[in-house]
Image 1 (cartoon, rainbow, N blue to C red):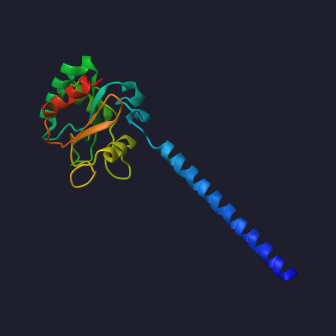
Image 2 (image 1 turned 135 degrees about the vertical axis):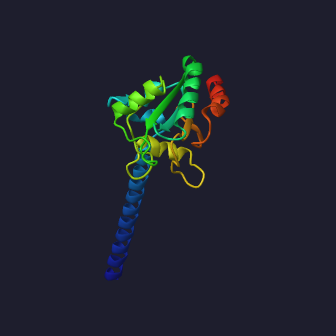
Image 3 (image 1 turned 90 degrees about the vertical axis):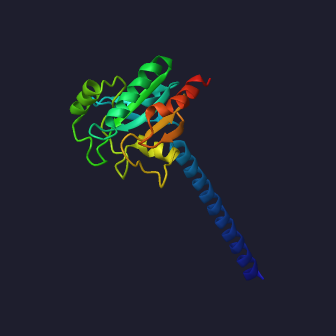
Length: 202
């Protein structure tokens, strides 16, 4: 009888221990998931990037503004028309809370081969860009800039999330949320109505 009692006691203790370990594991898993959720960026304002001169720029600087984020290149067949139309949009809406953020990228046929100084000279002198130009980045692959990983995760493209070519465009609202993605061949002026709608939103 005593042996049976001991066996029952050991069994109860074993079950209690297993239950304790299960609850602890669940709590740990829940805590891990919560931490992962907290680490996930909630908007583009959670990112810091480098400008063309290598200075850190928190994108929270642009809080409350409508943004058009574009990966640019100096030697692409789309370069001239895109810079021209981006300049038109910027001049027209910059005083209404609109900004264009240009990120040079050399991943597409090597069409942005220069260093940052050369890129700035081309963009600002040859193409008359007055909007901010940032550090050259990669937009695809394991070395893709964190901001581009986020943009792609928020708005995937046709046939996969990867950036297909130069001058892919992302439109961001006043809360830092990515609302639209446009193909490289989409004329910037075709986006004007969407920009107006976001600027008019309270």
